[in-house]
Amino acid sequence: MDLTLLRTFVTVHRAGSFTRAAALLGLSQPAVTSQIRTLERQLGRPLFLRQARGVTPTTVGDELAHRAAPHLDALVEIAGTAQDERDGLRTLHVAGPPEFTSARLLPALAPLIVQGLSVRASLLSSAEETLDGLAAGRHDLAVATARPRGGLFTATPLCDEEHVLVAAPRWAARLSPGGLREGAVVLEQLPVVEVHESLPFVARYWAAVFESKPAATATVIAPDLRAVQASAASGAGLAVLPRYLCEDDLARGRLVALLDPPVPPLRTYFLVVRTGTLALPHIARAHEWLLRAAGDW
Image 1 (tube, rainbow, N blue to C red):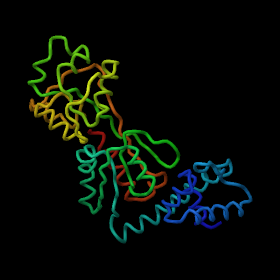
Image 2 (image 1 turned 135 degrees about the vertical axis):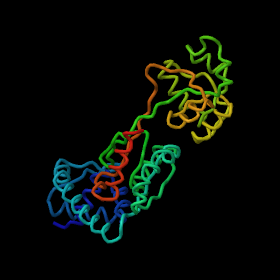
Image 3 (image 1 turned 30 degrees about the vertical axis):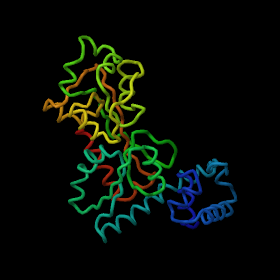
Image 4 (image 1 turned 180 degrees about the vertical axis):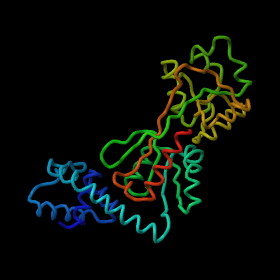
C-alpha cells in the first residue's frame, strides 16, 4: 500500500475535511479527493461519509486510522530527527494570547533558543483565530484559553490563571464600608477598565464571585491586558487581571486587591498541537519543555 495515500488518509481523518487536509499537506483539494478514492478502491471499502460540511470516517476508516497513524507518526519522527541532526533545531511557529505569550511562553522557551531553536511568534487575542491558524498549518504549537474539540488537535492543560479584582490605592480607599460584599456597589463607585465593551474579565469575575452580571459600562477600553494593567495602576479605575500580570504592582503597592474570595476565579490555558505533530522532535521538545516550565507558574 502506498505510504503517500496512507499519509493523506490519516491527515483527512484527523482534519475531518478534505479542504483542511489539503491545506496541511500542501495539495489541492481535488488531489486529496483523488488519493482517498484511490485508497478506497484498493481496499474495496468506503473510508469516509461525505457530508455538507466535512467528512465523517466509517468504522473501516476509524479502524485503519487507529492501526496506521502510530506507524506513520513514527516514520515522521525518524525523518524529523535526521533533519534536525543535519540542520540543527528547526524553526518553531507558536501562537497565543499577547500577554501570556510575552510574559510566559517566550521566556520559557529561552533555554531552547540558546540551544539553537528558532522561534516565530504570533500574538492573537482570539482563541478561535489561534486554533484556525493551527489547523491551517500556520502554527506548530499554540496556547489557547478553550479546549478544542475533534481529532485534529491534541490539547494538554498547561496552567490555571487566577484572576484578581484590583484598583489603585486611592480608588480602594474610596469604597464604602461593606461595599465589597456586593459587586454592584463596587461598580457604582469605581470606573472600569477592560479589554472589550462586553467586559469579559469583569463579567467572568462577577459570575464566579458575586453570582451576578455586572451592571456597568467600561470607562476605558484597551484590547491588551498589559494596557489595562498600566491604566489601572495609574488610577484609571478597577480592573480584573491575571495575578501573574499584576503581582509586581501588588507587591509594590501600585495596585490593591479589592477582594480575596475563598475560591478565586480561574481560567485554564491549554497547550495545543495538531495530532501527530509531536512526532516532530522540535515540536515535542518545546511541548515537553513548556509543560515542565508551567509547574512553576
